[in-house]
Amino acid sequence: MIPLNLIPAEPQHARQWYLWRKDATALRYNPMSEVPLDLLQDRLSQSSSDLSNETFHEYRWIIETEGNLVGTVSLHRVSWPHLHADLGYQIDSAYQGQRLGSCAVNMLIQKTFQESRLNRLMALIHSENEASIKIVQRLGFQHEGTLRSHFQINGQFVNEEVYGLLRHEWQDSSVSD
Ligand SMILES: CC(C)(COP(=O)(O)OP(=O)(O)OC[C@H]1O[C@@H](n2cnc3c(N)ncnc32)[C@H](O)[C@@H]1OP(=O)(O)O)[C@@H](O)C(=O)NCCC(=O)NCCS
Image (tube, rainbow, N blue to C red; front, top):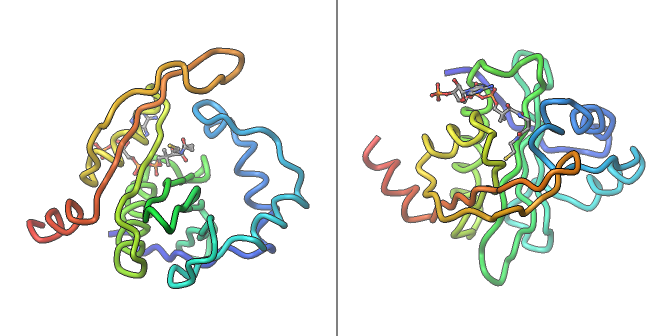
């Protein structure tokens, strides 16, 4: 197991996040428009990492291993009335392919179900983003459908796969591990 830490994302991480958002591996499969650094700083100051505080709609952590910041995980579009959230995750391209993504998403799910009341997690994944699809499948998410031509990336409509995990399914799989 790779020793990873999820550290609370702070406005001081905005520059690193800005650079990750511009990475070709992220832009290939995700509809990310360029957001100025100061707006990312604002977004970080308006998000939280304290899942017991139910007043936020976005929660974010930076993934750290051996003193290096190697990516970010988040919960966004969090609905406290309905107890669901969307997952976001990215690994720095220099560190991809070392199972850091799998470990970090696993840690995010554990943290979410242990520290919050959320009941459902969802990932929307570009149909061709094989690494991302493997991560959620291995962690027990169910394929719930396909959103056809849901986003435009580089002027092309692309399909997004919907994956969902319910709290009781995660508990079932952690019991059988
Ligand atoms: C998706 C992402 C987080 C994966 O991170 P990672 O650390 O490279 O993933 P892992 O090393 O844990 O690999 C996960 C699985 O995908 C496989 N994989 C890794 N890169 C792959 C690739 N380019 N093509 C196909 N499979 C790949 C691994 O072999 C592993 O499979 P396994 O569990 O069967 O062994 C990373 O590629 C990334 O940050 N991409 C850009 C942002 C993004 O797309 N985020 C997801 C939004 S839904």
